[in-house]
Each structure stands twice: as C-alpha cells, then as structure tokens.
Image (cartoon, rainbow, N blue to C red; front, side):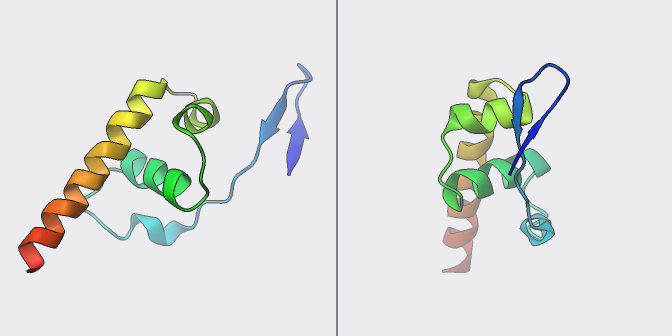
Length: 77
C-alpha cells in the first residue's frame, strides 16, 4: 500500500504484528528490525528509511537481537 503526502513523496505502509514484542529480552527496535529483515526480507537500508533511522543503527539492533537469541538457545541446551 502506498500513500502520498503533501510533499508528493510516497510512503510505505507496513503492518507489524504485536506478537513480535512477546520476547521481553529484546528492545522494541530490535524486535522490529529483526521482523522486517527476517520475515519481510527488507534490506537494512529499506528498514532505516522506513523507521527514519541510520542504516548502522538498524544493523546494530538486528545483530544484538540475533546475539540475544543465540545466547537464549545456548541456555536452553
């Protein structure tokens, strides 16, 4: 879905399910960036533009989320 604002810049609308926030060990931005990257296949740049953040911030949050999941998997075994 594409909406157009007064500046005539198309904006992307993405639905994010609320159940991605169930994992309380992840920060909200970590959960969102992980969902958009893994489930929707978006690039770090696309996520950064969508969320009005720097690409490096998204990369950092995504990698922190992956490390936290790896640490949780190690504890379960």
